[in-house]
Length: 203
Ligand code: GRF
Image (tube, rainbow, N blue to C red; front, side, top):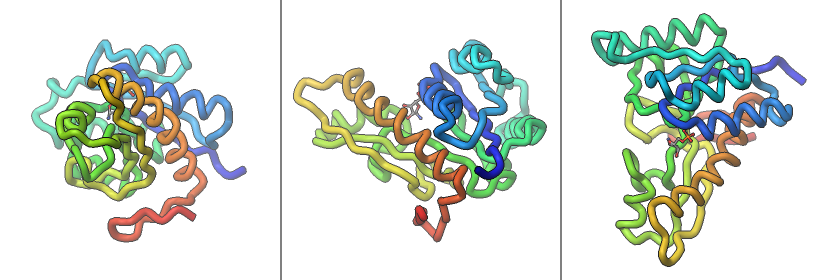
């Protein structure tokens, strides 16, 4: 087994995807460890999950910085301090800038609760329901300067069922998120992801 990959996870909320990744590392399914969890929200439950797993949990308040770039500089400094090699966005509700992306080229991942390029942005499950799609899902992708536009690593589809609400559909999608996000991190840790233009080639 090669070197253990150092992951930094950014969260704003409950952190169920963070938990799935922590658990997969603990089970040694991924040759990686979460070395820090950072949140812009002081009481994000994701920070609590980190503390429970003995992982440094940091609150970086975006309101204390003059703008997005200044905030991202602070993020980069903290991530570097912990020797982070892969940045995992897991429900991080901030738009990130090139400051973070340039510091970690093709090493920032995100998960989005839709089959991109359909339904980028907020409330993706609700958008799918309102549109009337029969299939919904989630996408793990590398982050680029756009919103939910980067090269796609893994997607998983789920059916939209008669009588679904935003809650029931989101729950079905999240179950798949917890499977594919650790899988994407594992492929990265194994050095099996190569970005060729818009495409991610998995070897
Ligand atoms: C997920 O649905 C993810 O797709 C979106 O934010 C949500 C985070 O959920 N980007 P959690 O905090 O991991 O539970």
